[in-house]
Amino acid sequence: MTNSQFVPDKPKTTTDQFEVERKQMVQTQLRDRRIQDQRVLAAMSKVPRHEFLDSWSQDLAYSDRPLPIDYQQTISQPYIVAYMTEAANIAPSDQVLEIGTGSGYQTAILGEIARQVYSVEIIPQLAKKARDTLTHLGYKNIEIKIGDGYEGWAEHAPYDAIIVTAAPKYIPHALIKQLKINSKMVIPVGTWHQDIVVLTKKENDIVIEKTIPVRFVPMTKKSCC
Ligand code: SAH
Figure 1 (cartoon, rainbow, N blue to C red):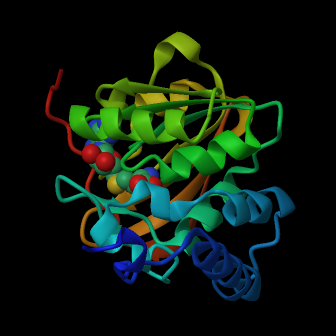
Figure 2: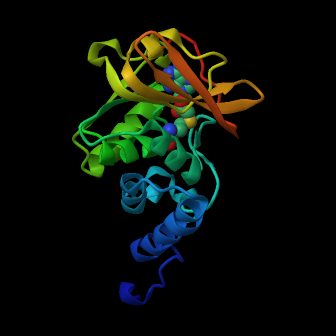
């Protein structure tokens, strides 16, 4: 007779180990690379990145790289998530728009910092899965819509910050329109060569700052849903 107590467990990273790895990630990948915003560091220390991945890739959750999720999409490298969130300059009272929900990891980071997050994802299955993950983790200030992010989410505009995590060739006009004056949009722009652009909307002007080179999945424009 087999006693189930003696059946060895499959070697799998435990929650405690994940926590240790997450702390190391914050120190070596973020603090040591000059991410300084305390709210961003606190959010990245808290959100369980492994919960946004399938079981086969969970052990890599805190490594210094992007990882594949379903439908040929990717969850961004932790440093890039922190960099973009810091650049967006988000206050606790802010209402934020995200384009490209993907796994929902960046969405959760925003949910830790902002009052309310609206996120748009074009692939329905990814939107549904991210919704489930975020509900399971207890987020109540996040809404996800299946739709084309080129159009933004006009219903809740204007936004205090916009973060885009898929790369268009040009900055979508609707997104600029939905941004508040003196607020920032952080967006990867380009095709083969992409840079993260930090756009600040002024009263009568737009200030564009090209920052670090990146490689995001392209922003697609098929009409969906
Ligand atoms: N922030 C995500 C990264 C996802 S990758 C994460 O942390 O996991 C980029 C995502 O943008 C993909 O899920 C892709 O389906 C989505 N996307 C691409 N074009 C889009 C569009 N026009 N509107 C909304 N989402 C789009």
